[in-house]
Image (tube, rainbow, N blue to C red; front, side, top):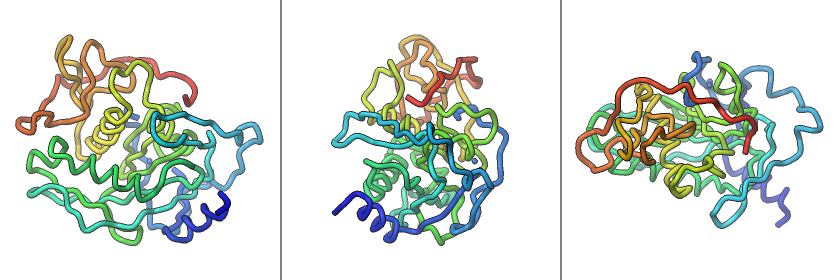
Length: 265
């Protein structure tokens, strides 16, 4: 099946919505994503300059390359919900999953499964008994929406100072920058899978009320709420708040004044 036909079939099979304005630096919150099938903000209707339409390809160490433009359309495929509930006790937080339609190399069903696996991991946020998490469909009420976004759409959703590099949480928007999902960050010191676990858990942690933390000491695990995308400061990568399945692992509150790299790679 031609690529355009496959994309049309995928869009037809999933709920389609248009979004506009929601990194790790937690900018001032913008309005939460509204009902699906609703345009949020005006920016997404403005065609990008021709130079920005050139695709950016990140060669991820997975089966296929993930290809995306720097400036996406702002149109979203919302994946169907699931009956699975992660966690046995605590407040139920329901979330939707949306993938920008310009992104190739990320299957919606596989991506949703990856997110459910990360958020349902026994070392994740449900381990403390305070939270339960469930993915719901596009028409269901939700406490937050998790977006996989192109760099420019990341900037619109995150608000604050645009950087096109980090991921973020902004109000009820949990935004994963596809450039980071595809290629992690240089010198992270752990496989891509670990970085993906970190970025999902970190940004979701912000939605659950968690602030930034510092490295507790050289050679120790980085707290999941440390801004590991920008630097580890002597710690080693760690994507989990309960890495041993027992007591929550944290560091001193605060954040470093690390520079944010330029570009989207």
